[in-house]
Image (cartoon, rainbow, N blue to C red; front, side, top):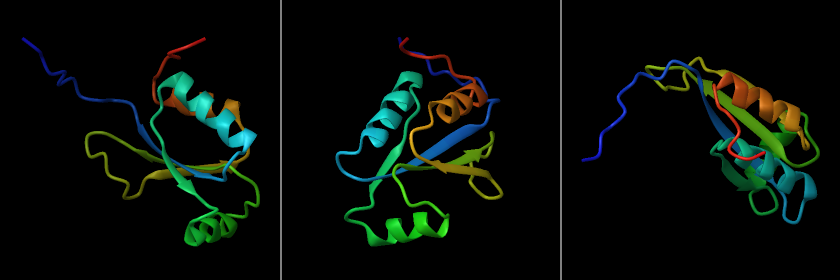
Length: 109
């Protein structure tokens, strides 16, 4: 019989959006870094979504990827008044910081 883990989550939960461009080495490196930690993410292709491109430009970024993280805290898991962080480019140090803050251990070496 399967059991459901009902242990309350105590660490903040990151909701990650990656604003991408096709065939970008830095984007692919960011995917790999996030996958290493088992961090789920959402992708938005700026080459076909003008609003996404405009949004990243309002943040002051001109290169891909742009990583936008909203932190939600248990028990509500609601983004209202959430902590937000963002950056552009391949930043494995920032991905590791997110994973550490979320209380994760790497899935791969």
